Image (cartoon, rainbow, N blue to C red; front, side):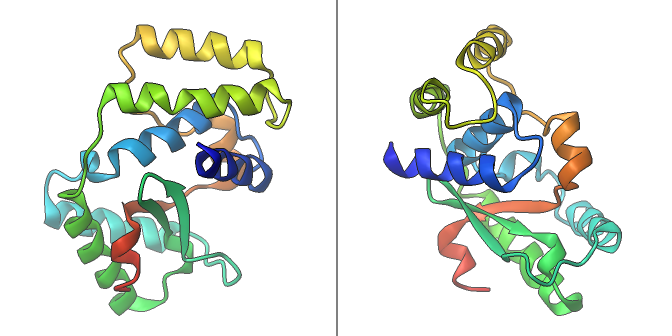
Length: 169
């Protein structure tokens, strides 16, 4: 629980516009990984190439960022060249089979999130978070996109994969 709190707080401090939806997306990814978006490997490669071409390069950006649950985000802006792009694609495809998790596991991850909000250590209030979580749970805890504010301020471009695969990069 402490590690998840530290990860949540790190993301809240690092990313402008980090709100309840972005926190829940982070927890969703830490529970289920990123394999839910991989349906066709060749299409995934074409989309990755397109996204990398449109993503500004960020030399100071960390290549891998832990998100908890044994997963990390591989930031596309830190990739250099076709060989790194292909390595990232292979790792993402391999990591897709490592997807795991359950709705119960996701719901359990809301406790550290609520604790941080209750301690005023996040950029949103506990009552705002409770309202968001109530609506989210009523929808059946679906996969999420980042919030509009987060997307506009951060232009997120990454792939989620098991941390163990990051060591192979």
